[in-house]
Length: 263
Image (tube, rainbow, N blue to C red; front, side, top):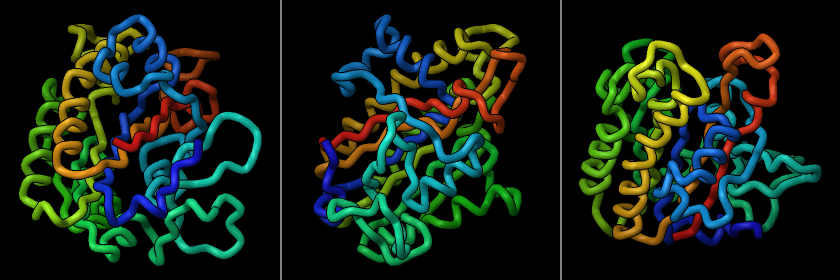
């Protein structure tokens, strides 16, 4: 069923969570074996397999913030939830929220939303010019090493900060909250006591994330009606067909888990 994002903007808070580097196969298998009960309670039909528009964090998020979220992994022109105004778009429909801005955070801010970015991986590290590009789209942005890829409590730190910042916004103002979850990114072996990343260590990191992201969703639901988008930005290879890492064209990189919920 196609969500009518146009009718939701203005009445619903929006939560966009990117589970950075999470592979579709790892996410779905973890859900099926009961390792992620928090996500399972939200995703009655499991994760949807989609194709990412970018094979690494920077390119994928640029696309996301322009309205190009991961595309359903089946043929056809698939309507988009959001779009920047652009002539000739065949995936912009009467249900699409079209924003007169180059990026969604700016467009939603123009509609009265307070926009918050809780960074995670290095492309949100504002100590560098490159790491400042994506956060600069938001009215408010945060990054620290406590939220980053090497911290063993990164997700709970991100969730605690996100809740504090959302609670600081007046209750009658709508919020766009974006969280880039860093725990799945290498070195995800820190969540299982190993020294080498693998699908198994990614699954262990996901089980850790599952204990905290649903708590953030529950908090947001108590604040206002919520449009929640959960997705990975890209996957990563652990030796499949000789490939390691991402920024390459391989199914384990292009196939990502996705869910959109109105709560």
